[in-house]
Length: 436
Image (tube, rainbow, N blue to C red; front, side, top):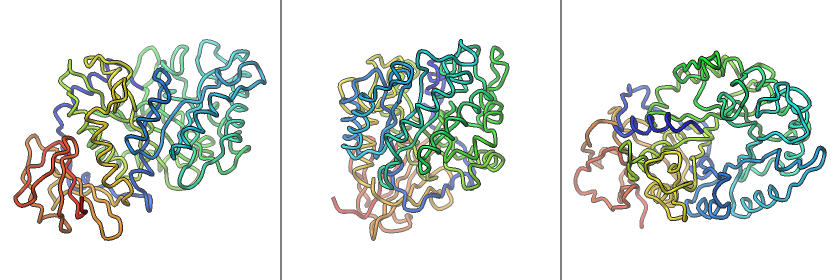
């Protein structure tokens, strides 16, 4: 999770909804056979909102999974003594709700010392071995899940920031050493476990941001140093938190991201990327209203999943009611669990086509400012359209690849008449051949 000032800036820039894409950039092919929105989309459960409220919201949204922390310091209550009761209850509740899980392994238990005692991270010292034992015990306890409901183990959260690493700032080599020992311990305990690393704020190709007090760029330089061969050889996936000015910027970054992972390959096979934090906040002080959040979150989900990327929206429920404070208003639901326009839009999308197989994104009739997400199930087909131009554009439904009989504005829920051209803007519209 990035800081308030940065989030506010991103939210303000995103309000323009504009992005310049070339015809090549406007293509995104799903790389995971049979993937659906439900198999790829999850929401974040945080520690300062009642768990049951967040789980109920996840079910209401219709997403397939949840991401939640699994804290070493709250589990190993004394050296060598684990109390799994809270973790057991939460994992069981998620499974009971039919949700797959991303478990973020985090925290430093008392009684252990890191190489740098000022850090929050268990890197080096006896803390690193202790954290690895905890991670292995968690994998043995909660398993690898199933094909439909997998368990993904994430190693730490945003280690490229002082907020989560602590001490004098990020230490990419320290993270690589810690994550390698943890990953190898998990694999020794459960060879079929899915382990994801890096878990960085931003991406390895985000424009460089040099922090003088850290003495490094926290994106490209940090990632290049942390992605050591032994770590990458152990990992099954990498987790990124691509908070961007606009969702469409992800498409522009794709070639550079592919090059980075070609140079830092995962276990000798195609790279699996988990976007384990993504999304936009309401920020009335910066002009980002609730309906704009809804459009941005929808486009984020459609673009990321079109590439076959597991995508976790941050977060299920707001942590406060101040609409001028973006740190409090990322949620898809209010503090009482009532769906915001963003939550209602995601629920609408999932209800309509959550189990359709994702095909990908293409420009409509080679118009790169008009993006079209395509999904199908049997004889049914669905298209979600939106424009990245500064003004809405006319679209004739007859220009779609196959006939459609129904249309709906996913943000407002308004039914669309298909007897005349539609005006398509930044708010995605769903067109299908499904009956009501």
